[in-house]
Amino acid sequence: MNTLDRIREELKEMGLEGGFFYKPENRFYVSGFTGSAGYALVTMDKAYLITDFRYFSQVGEQCPDFELKEISTQISFGQVLSELGLKKVGFEDDFMTIEDMEVLKSKFSGELVPMKRFIEEIRQIKREDEIELVRKAQNIADDTFSYMLDFIKPGMTEREVHLELVNQMTRRGADGESFTAIVASGERGALPHGRASDKVIEKGDFLTLDFGCIYKGYCSDMTRTISVGKASDELKEIYEIVLRAQKAALEAIKPGAVCSDIDGVARGIISEAGYGDNFGHGLGHSIGLEVHENPRFNQVDNSILKPGMIMTDEPGIYIPGLGGVRIEDLVLVTEDGYEVLSKSDKELIELEF
Image (cartoon, rainbow, N blue to C red; front, side):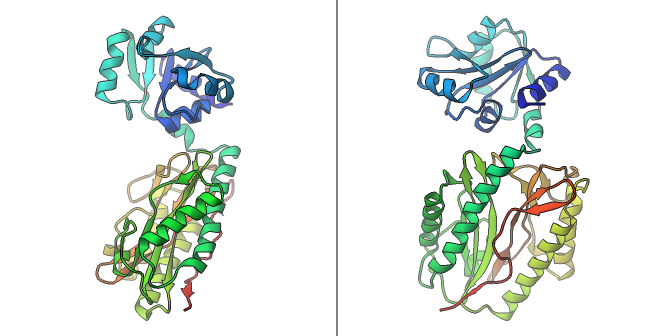
């Protein structure tokens, strides 16, 4: 069943005549349209891309199965819905603002029904073409990490490392970062989301690189923590605990597994080692058109893993005044287990100078 048919099946179950999508990731998923403004409207027998004159040619190229409808300063989206004779239409209640809703209601007298993220649920299971695009995005990140191992030197600032990281991903075909990379060294490694600063990287620092890129709309995400020079025994011990937890969680990933149980595998190992209070975030999340999607590996998400889901496995330990360690792989749930899409070495790397 193709995407439009799956959407129509959901709309029918909700008793809707149609549904529209204008969250950028959903609009792209439904239609293939990459423009920055417009609505993808799916009805029981037709599909429309509703946008302004700037994108008319683009719609023709990218959306062959969609009929173009114009909006402008004189023609509102609500008027288009009314002209199509629609009376009961679904909308993205998690994305539409109150202001947008009021404007729409001023021109459309039909009923607007929340769609409750059903398109995001469809997006959880990746098609083969989507998997290949995520795989390519991850390959770019892995190749960039390999390059960075030769680039990073004591005396550089975290900002310098971040700039080179982005530059190298772009050179390899990335459309940009999938999120602002985390580059945290030394004591700043205790910040799980420590963005690059002017801190100088020193010999003996642990350096956490959490980064990813976008390739043709799809995201990658990986984390490696390396030692800039020889690591202390204390940091080595913490690294080995995180690595053991990460590998154990990985081995538990398979269709039918419960997300909270996977989180519990890694969390149990870290807690048993005495660092439970130093692992304060969930183990991972799904990824695709957005870098953070559902389901999640955490303590409360009881979603069931299914083939085609792509998840991250990223435990960490963060100790104020010392530093931190996080190790993250991108993982595809397969029919009989898992496939690790991240290819970079996970054993502790100690750069030599």
